[in-house]
Length: 407
Image (cartoon, rainbow, N blue to C red):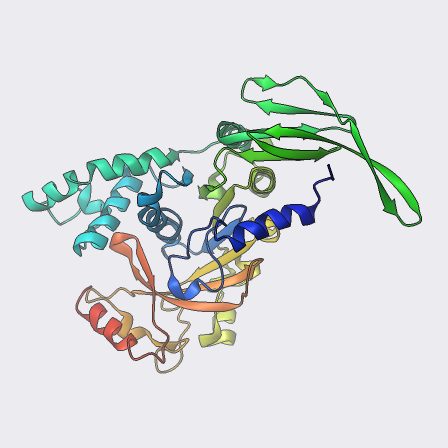
């Protein structure tokens, strides 16, 4: 038995891809699909300023649209989200998701605030029946998307993620001479790395220890000082959403937010690399994006950049995909005619005066191209996003008309 090398692992993925078995979720925003899809082992960082809709963007892209894509395939794939909502209570999160469903399925535009009875719009008897009719779907969704609200410590986060990984697969680690399995109840009896392969290093042959073992009918190999994780279902995607990382408990780090965020980043990068989890971290931009001199110098070319990510320089480096969400209307990033990236921002205003336009900027992408902005329509009341046609596409005028009609 040969040592499992990175090339051998690639060949396994290559074979799956050839057979059409590589598990991923198509990008919910069609025009972005050429840049990336939602896949295992992808660390995503999303940032913006307050009020732009970053939480809605995360919910729309990583939770609700994937849920609707996969609801009919729940027996074949294992999709699960661990959602750490440190900015909002879970009841509000559920209300926002119901507002999304009402908009998607019935074209009903109503906010979470109204659904909770705090807004100006009252719940009619007909709407009450529709909302109650979502009971089964919401219960199933919340079985797969677990919402944890309130602040947690880095240690609590790490322990919860490791426990989840051990419940969904088998995890083996090794030192220089032995290997063993780590389970939720402890570790197994150690076994020896009982095979040796001579590997050429320069002019010398160097011995490398390894062992082969069986996992549910699959032969796996492990080398010294390494690990092997085998999910129970090969079509598994566990997304870990951290909304409001700046609110992580910093007690263990002397109140230093940056140190705490760096520690969170290390935990998320570790579960990506070891267990193929896909973390999604939401970060608040610093005030640099609103600097008056920057607005003056960049004008309609303004947009998010790496330095805008608050307390997360290391996170930016660790992430595979970085998306900056931007409201050019808020930051006056339009030309003298009111256009940004070719879109007429005046025609993107809803009847009540707020802008329906946002742009998503792919700032970093380990799996495809970057440095591209995408125009988005944002229905804030419903936490809903969709990609706009290109400015040169005649269908953009249909979108302008929809927005003018209050849709």
